[in-house]
Image 1: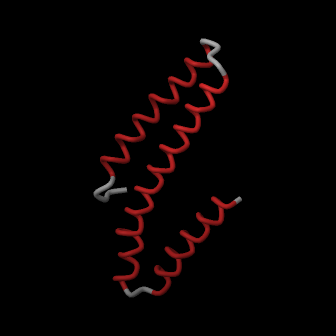
Image 2: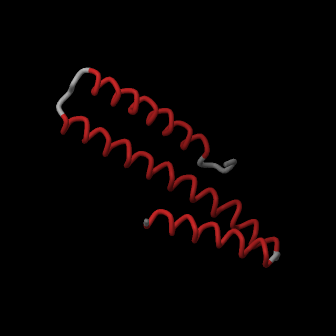
Amino acid sequence: MTGPNRPAAIRRLRKIEGQVRGLARMLQEDRYCIDVLQQIQAVKAALVRVESLILKDHAASCVEGAIASGDPEDQRRKFSELVDLLDQVRR
């Protein structure tokens, strides 16, 4: 990932890293289950936001590059990668 969203994605991942460490502490401290589950939901939501940033960069660089190249095979490959990824998400 080399696009403009890279710094934001890295910042978010570092924050998520801290949240996950916090979750481990919560379990070690025997915190209330609902509090732990709420924090897990927050981590999942944060990961979805990072995923969105990376997907936008992929579309703006890799997919756009394949389209601009005029290479039908590269275009099919990039499109197929996206379809496969979205298929995995739905499972």
